[in-house]
Image 1 (spheres, rainbow, N blue to C red):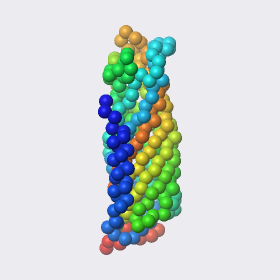
Image 2: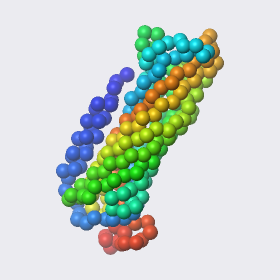
Image 3: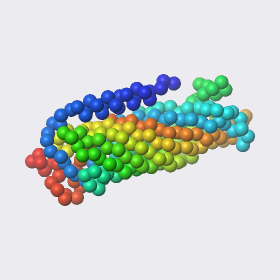
Image 4: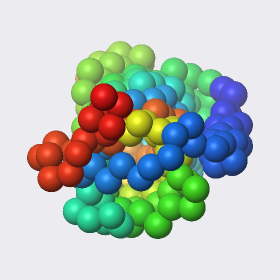
Length: 237
């Protein structure tokens, strides 16, 4: 399996630098209290499996599998408490495969799953310079696994779990309320996978760290939902 993680991180970094050097197309700081962003995200697990048990008895030791990468459309919604503090909800759906590693399981397709991995973050947005607005954030990610399928027979179930997440990113004002940006998130999350009714084996269990790195590029629009100030579109009239 090709490891796209270094390429993805480099691409996100270069994108952030590129848009960071772009001059906004129109002046003005739109201080709306909501921002919605749509973009593309790479969900790049840094997975590590803790062996495998067979019917409750240790069977294989070490890191026996890995979870592959996925590139998906994504959406975020941010509410600004004030000009520096924001609360953001990130959402997407991604499909991942689980592939065996090592001398026994190496190269074997073990299973597939679809994940719903929303992240709720508290952010600090630094004061912008010429429309360039970096930010950092911390929060919690919940990953729900569904539509699991076993490639070795029987059934696969992966426990949903919570993890702690950190974030860094930048938004660049393009004018008239529009922004372009990029961000990087990393979550520490561990869970358990269980194969049941595997032909000739029975029940297989493994604990693993998923620890996804999520890199995103997006376009966003900031607006004032409650009309405390003139909304960005009013400036275009």
